[in-house]
Length: 534
Image 1 (cartoon, rainbow, N blue to C red):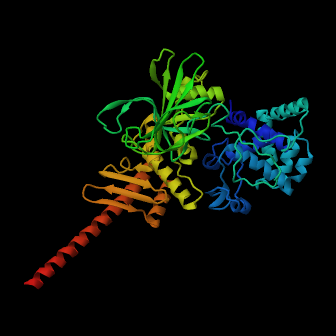
Image 2 (image 1 turned 180 degrees about the vertical axis):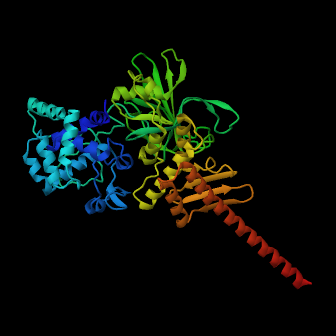
């Protein structure tokens, strides 16, 4: 199957829904998505779920719409950033519908893809010539007309009419930043993370970022020991933690922050065979329920935090126990439980650990599916996704530049030692989680060398050459030089490595010279005071 066909299959349902709502051929929407987003692999689609190259208009920005900075026709242009791909599809449809430039298209039949592509080209959607021909070629080679015919047959068979009033949006969450002139439009939100009966323990649009899976691991509190980790750790940042099923009962609550697991909640769900499932949430910042409360799927139980004596940073420890009908209790891999409720509730999220989906091995018919991401794809996913609660991307243009620099530096650092893909994904996970890049692989002469990115977007260098220790924020000039080196496609990795090493060594030596100068001044001042006393 070609990449075009893979893209079409993935987003066909969304395109067909847009056809029902606005009368735009699904084939045309898919063809534009394929062309504009390079099959979902463009920087705009990866960093901002923008599949149609839509620039951020003044009205978008005025209404608080999120955006990212990208060089296209002009340097540092602002483009719309969406919470989900579905929001990108919805906004694309509204642009065509609400612009007078494309008004003639809406007089055509919804399955007249040739007329639509020509009308979109005449309306000036793209500056390059032959846009309609390119779209038609994509449609015809990949047989995308079948989606148009499928919608037409369904509408006729069910006696439905095209239009937003008759076809409320259901397949994706409507972004609050997308403004619409259709004030009477009925908006329905169907979360991918929750439904009426099942929910993941924290709300995510795409995936749970797991920092430690179930099983034996190095004890985070004592690196010399091994321990059995009876749960999974999910990266979180003051997120609401949610009940996973209907009919749950809160059976335990701990409000003491200075215990091993800190503040915690345990919810129990009964099974028809007399067994029970207990889910436990640890290290919470606050708790919103009490023992005896009945809870339902998606209900808030508390807020994630960093309480407890056995934690090295904020996260949610999520544990699952099975209690058999005869009372025997055993800890189970929470990934197996999440896979179960994901299939029951048709929840689309993954639980990704170092680029691998932990749920895949527990899902039916998953053996033929490649469930791992390449190191490059894994890094892009982590850096761009708010789902990970560690994403560095931001609407702030300065933060956008820092993110680009950070990702380029990280990519270079993990490749320099020819590590395996698994080792690279592990290093990327740790680096993004801590917002730090270890530069020692690039500068092995250093005893310690780390570049950190703060919440304010500032890049801070910590270096130690064995003689001098430096901790300071990079100046604008240093930041620009580093970005230029990393972005120079004419330089080899070895050349980039040498230039970065030279820059860091210069910073350290400058600091060392400054310290030496201050020491000399202190010595001279001390000698002068001694002479005066004599």
